[in-house]
Structures are given as C-alpha cells and as structure tokens.
Image (cartoon, rainbow, N blue to C red):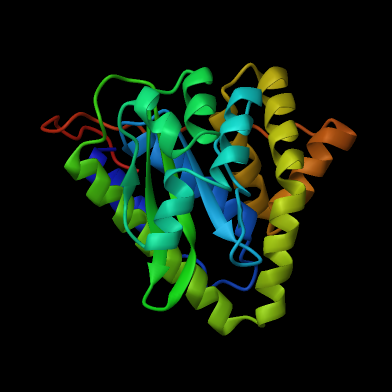
Length: 253
C-alpha cells in the first residue's frame, strides 16, 4: 500500500463514526496509531476536554512510565494544553529554554528522551474537543507537510466525534468518554500480554484485538478483558505495507 493510499484509508476510518456500535476507545486509539505510521514522530496522544476545561488523555499509543509522566504534565501545561486553549498549533523550541515557559512539562519531556513536541487543536467552530499531541525523538522538527496532515487528521476526527455526538444520545458519548478514561489501562495491559504471547509488536497486538472486536461486533474493552482474564489470544492480522513515494504498486488488497 502506498503512503497516499494509507492516508486515504485513514481518513475513511476517521469518518466511520456513524455506525450503531461506534467504539470511542477503538476510534481514539486507532487515530494515535495512524499518526505514528504516517507522520515523522515517535508517539502520539489525543487529549479530550472532559469535563471541560480539564484535559485528559484516554488513548496514547504506548504509555510506558516515561511517556505517562509526560502525558500527566501535558494535561496541565505544554503544547497540548495551549493548542486546546488557543485553537492554534503549538510547538516546543529548545527544551532548556522551554523550562521557564512550561516548568513541569519541558523537564519531563526531556527526561523521557523526547527532543520536541507539537500539538494541533481538535476544534470545529465553537466546539473545542481537545488536542492532538505529537512527540519526536529525532533532530528534525515536524515538517510543514506533516503539520498540515496532522491538523487534517485532527479535523477529521473532530468532525467524526461531533457527528457521533449529534446522532447519538449526548449521555451515551459522555459515558463512553468516561469509560475511555477509566479503561485505557485495561487496553494497554491486554496489548502487552498479547504481544508477549504472540511475540509481536504492541501495534500488531492492538490491530489483532481491534479486528476481532469488529468482526464479532463487540466492544474493544471486552476483547481486552478476555485477553487478560481468560488467556484469549486473537490471531494477528497482516499490516498494510507503505511504499516509498514513486514506488510501483505490485499487489492489490
């Protein structure tokens, strides 16, 4: 699969929020995975204002202890908090200088091994849902093209969530947001167990759980609980291959 095809597929996924069995946790987790695959970043996390104005991060890609410390601080200060507050993209500069601007966030970012962070808002007109945080470990800043794509992904996700909120009962989405915040650790624990059992990556493990949930029309949280409580091990699914620009497409899906 070419990068262009991968981008198109991702936007189709982000638009798929109008189904009866819409799973918010699955949706947000998949968004962070796609950001990791498509952008020149190391990690990504979605921050939602629930209840506003407080930010919470229900679905990071792989919240190890160091990343979790970064996310905890990012809920209170840093690019994610400022992007949500100002509705504008916000990026770090030199981390040593940013310690004065963000005294809690910048040192934790540096201690976790990251070299920079960029956040884009998740907002549509008067509706501000939160922000998307992108973390880097390389020397290069996020390119203008990647920043534009990140904002487009955040916009698509925002529209999808607002559509789901409009069509569904308001309390249903709010309940799912509350559940997402409470059960993220369950999803991550199941990913780790499945990855160890199958000797696969965490993202492959998540894809396997997600595919099983969609195939059998059950919630991702239930699949994760089965992995933890019963030893259930869904088979990994093949992941799409992204060809470099200009490469000839030789296979079809």
